[in-house]
Image (cartoon, rainbow, N blue to C red; front, side, top):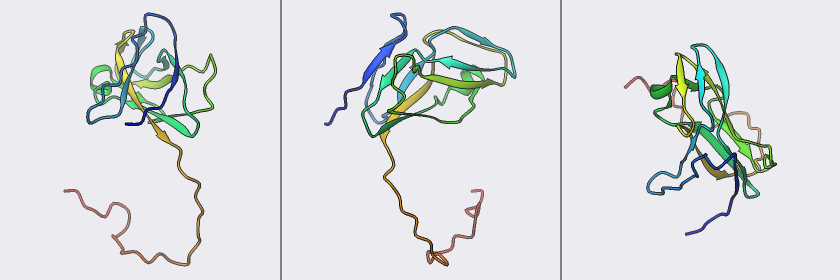
Length: 146
């Protein structure tokens, strides 16, 4: 099994350390680094308590946990956060932009989102053609409802 070393800085000693559980999922939970109360309709940048130096050629994708909306009534406003390896300075803290659909409270060390690290997309060359020759599926939304 291959491993990549990632330098990580924690905001303080009260932040629960990241843990790679393994198994079938390669997503790693991130936690709130602060207590925060939001009223319905408010937005905030929730501090995640970590900064990392990712390996060259990699980026992190941050998304809500499947229970984030149910537990907290929060929607991640950018739907998926992307952090590349250049965001690695001592003040480049990871945060989650959220919008509250109901009054809510998030406590420090509550698990609110998750991330995974992937390689950058390879460089692409776009070849223009007059028409595509693949099998036509019927256009956008053509797979039906069931």
